Image 1 (cartoon, rainbow, N blue to C red):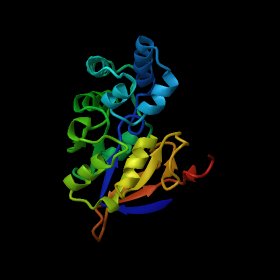
Image 2: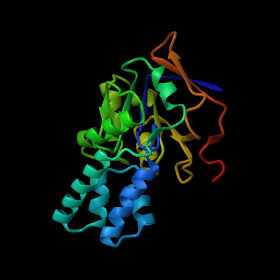
Image 3: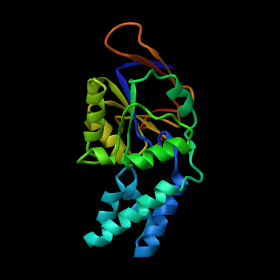
Amino acid sequence: MSDIPTSALLFDMDGTLVDSTGLVESTWAGFCTRHGLDLAEVLAYAHGRPTRETVGRFLADPPLAESETRRLVAHEESETSGITAVPGAAELLAALPPGSWAVVTSAGRRLAEVRMAAAGLPLPALMVTADDVEHGKPHPEGFLRAAAALGADPASTLVFEDSPAGVRAGLDSGARTIVIGGLTAHDGEAERYPDFRGFRAAASPAGPARLVLTTPEPAAARTGEGR
């Protein structure tokens, strides 16, 4: 086990706190069927990125891309079947004091609220969504905004992510970055755990850190292992 002093915890949502994999894949499968696109290619690009950016990447016609983006977002906001919390996420969030954590997601605000509720997870006081940033992941803007809003030095925060784009954003923000899930193609600077089981958090007894996060025995301590 390892104790990590930190000023704030910044969580991605889809794939990190919330398991929405089946729904996300079926949504993009419909998009690919409508437009004759390769699902594997679209999913590889879409992981961790805003819907609008992904649609714009594969549809060159702006009016069509805008219409398709609205269609996809409306579907995602109305469909919650199969959405669950990642193991251990609810227990960790319940232990965090208000103002010590945020969600930084490539989803829009409404979709983030819908999916957190569907997974039975609490909403933080601060969410930075695709609606709040000019540059989506892999740009670090979202994490930098969240750290600033919480009054935390980015270098003293912990970022939790599951996608290559999100990991890059976390690392480029200066944060210590932890990968949750089975992602294998990501930067070796980030640590990796399968889920949140075994994580513990407590108020810091002294110093500038607000929290001490205790990590479990690592299943694979560094991202470079098992690649």
